[in-house]
Structures are given as C-alpha cells and as structure tokens.
Image 1 (cartoon, rainbow, N blue to C red):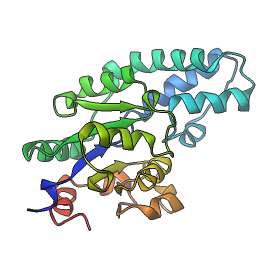
Image 2 (image 1 turned 90 degrees about the horizontal axis):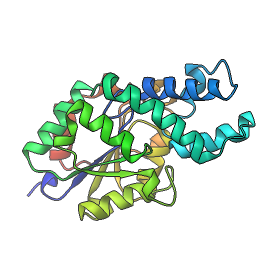
Image 3 (image 1 turned 45 degrees about the vertical axis):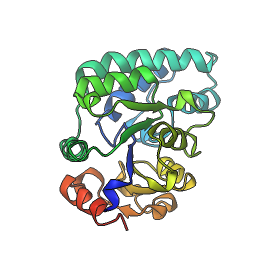
Length: 229
C-alpha cells in the first residue's frame, strides 16, 4: 500500500485550480467603483488573494468607509463575478491533468474555497472540473475563513479522512497557514511568486516558488506516490 491508498486531496479553487483571480479583480473593481472608490488596481487586489469574499468586503468597509452592509457588498461582488465566471474562467492545464490522474486512481478529492457556493459551482461547471470534484466547501459554510483551519477540517470531515491523511493544494499564504493549522500537508504554489518567502509558505511540505509555472501534474503525482514526504 502506498500513500495514494490512504490520502485525500483538497484543492483551493481560485488561483490554484482555475485562473479566476482576474475575474475577481474586475468584479471587485466594479463594485468599489459603484460605491465611489476609484483607482482600485491589480496591485491593490493582490493583497486580498487568499482571503474570502466576506472578509475582503469587511476590510473594504473599514478601509474605504463604505456604508453598504457586508451582505450587500458580498452579493454585488458575487453577482458581478458570476457574470464573468460563466464565460471567462479557465482551468490551469497542469491542474486539470493532476485532477484526472487522481480521479483515475479513485483518490477522494474536494474543493475548499473562500468563494461563495454559487461561485464555486460556476467555476467548476464552466471548466468541466465538476465531473471529478463533487465535494465542495465554501467559507460561507464554516465559522471562520482562512487562515483559520475550519474550511479544510470541514472538507476532511465530508471526505471521511483524518486531517493527517489530507494533502492541500494552495496558492495563497492564508491558505497555507490554514492547512498547517488543520494538521494537513500542503503543496504550495504562490499565485504571487514574490510572496513565496512569506513565513506561511515555509510550513508547506512542498513549496513551488514559481507558482503555476513550476507545477507539473506528473511530478506532483509522483511526490504523492512516494509518500508525500
């Protein structure tokens, strides 16, 4: 028996499985502009990568003095994002290949994302990944989003796998911190490569500093087969 016979794999969604961050940036920019905040840049957006939509808009309300409620801002951002996600989301090719390799071995898989359930469904359906990734957990379904471990622990519960038997794939520092707090191994591929030296990524079992550019499905699969050490 090798490690693949006893483990489950949990994927972050945005920036890990699918290239959806540009859609979230545009949805964020439009929402903020509608509330009088102009000049929201990609560099501004990068500081929110890995944080749930709900937590992001909480920060917006404080930072920009927005009067709309958290619920209203989340609904607006999600509505704009969903319009973009249904037609403009693509899966990273090597990630798709990795999911297919795991599916061929019947490795249990789940998605744990800071996005809303509707956004997760739109991204997975739009890319065809929903056929292999039927177990999903949104930050909306747990008390605390990343970097708290709640979302990964709930995914493990739904998979029926102890945390120590789970391997997480993450692109953001808060997600890597959440995986570590959950007692899970982590393959970290920073969405923003210049953030690869963040202390949260130092806890990862396998760090790919170049992010998606460094990720290869076969190499990751072999790492798992060798015992994910």
